[in-house]
Image (cartoon, rainbow, N blue to C red; front, side):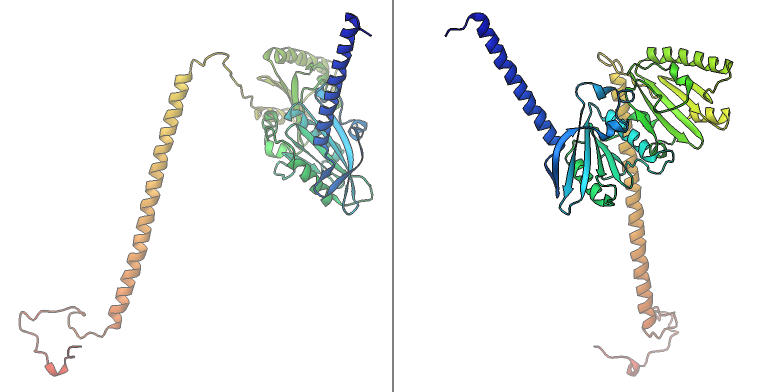
Length: 397
């Protein structure tokens, strides 16, 4: 039977769609197998790989705090693993589109681990991923664009060491990406200590889940084009919102100031202090005094980055500056090296000279000498010295 042109076209289209769907399924299956392989070290996957359930039920993974959760390009799966000794673990893996989003989820999970009291800190000096946090039943880390949480499947189990070993094995097979935390976190005052309990959100749409009971934040309209970080300093809570454009920062600044004045007018709770710093909107809540809040804001510095769309007109000046700095650095290095070398030579020479002098003195004291000149030779030019008795002289050896 001969097909008409329309039927022929439909048949070819159907074959093409089946081929595309098959390739997409194979590609997705390969990606899933790469995220959660059937065997990792001495641990084996049991059961089936399923979509994320625990993180979603706990309210830690939602579109209000993470913009990319409901969009394409974000993969979240979980599976159970068992060790050779029979210990069971739940492994949850989320693949984001950026390192910042993965770190954001880590800080949110760390906050949930702590509960109302901060007990667990995010560690940057960790051999499990770029940063990790550990509780008595689970360990979570981020590395590159990936977030991984390994939990004890049985609430009665207490084999966290095995869970850490499993997490370390997963971290070893994940690309490191930028291998650093977002820059905004490093702009916190005393960020090395503040980041341990800070919560960071990337491309957020709402801050209500991060900073609660603060009506002023209803004036913040980010539309998924801003990042934020909140940290605690004693009784004070510092919030920095970074807008990606000066226009968005200016518009939000106007709304925030108007909202604060409105809160003051009606006697409602307002921030202890607020200030716009570059593209940052900086809030301080629950400070002991307004002065303390302002001092905290003074420590926040906005570092402006300038990028030339065309050729940099200051490229020659920049090259000259680098040349001068390099030359000066080489000169100082040579002076330092020469000074250290001379000092070392003087020290070694002085040491060996003193050693030789002491040895010669010891030898001189050990030799019995008969002299009226302190052991030195004396010429009898004036013929005042009596002649030596040849019988008392030691003969030739």
